[in-house]
Image 1 (cartoon, rainbow, N blue to C red):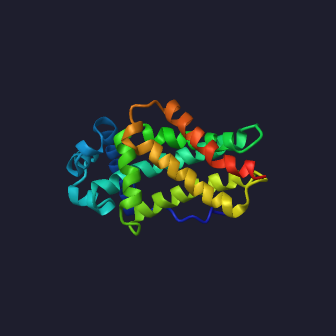
Image 2 (image 1 turned 30 degrees about the vertical axis):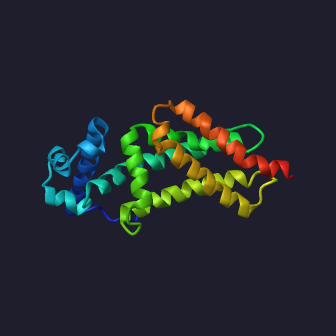
Image 3 (image 1 turned 90 degrees about the vertical axis):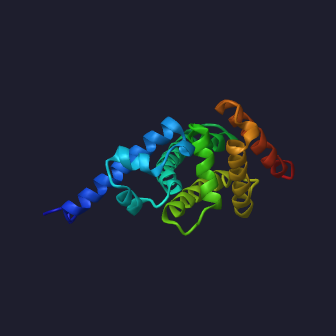
Length: 207
């Protein structure tokens, strides 16, 4: 018996091929030059598609960036969740740091691109499909932090969800604020760790 999956038609394969060429071209150009110095025309030229074809997949340069960064963000969250579950230490601080480390590294891999990506997710149109996907990933990260915090007997479920929002805000500010740009990833992570530790401390003092 067959697998039950319909074979992909020629037109669908062509669409997938064009989308992948556009994604690859955008990814390469953003890394080489930064989002601010790349145009949609450059992406279309490198992808070997007409500019009108590119706009069928992403209508703006911001959407192209979100397409590219969403893939990186998703992979970083996957790595972080795996790392957090592998931490063999008491308490929740170290697992939380293990979860967010790949995310911080992802956002700071190319500072301009990472800052622009987060800005677009926060301030762009939340109904736009690529932003919806990015916001869903942000929600997945927040849920991951919440799940780790609920392992702490001193933190209830409601507080864990609120604290997770605080922690993701800390990550956002620490990876995008101009004052942190000159710091290394390790220095930023150390500062984030101190902030999270201070955020969680009152729950343990009250216990």
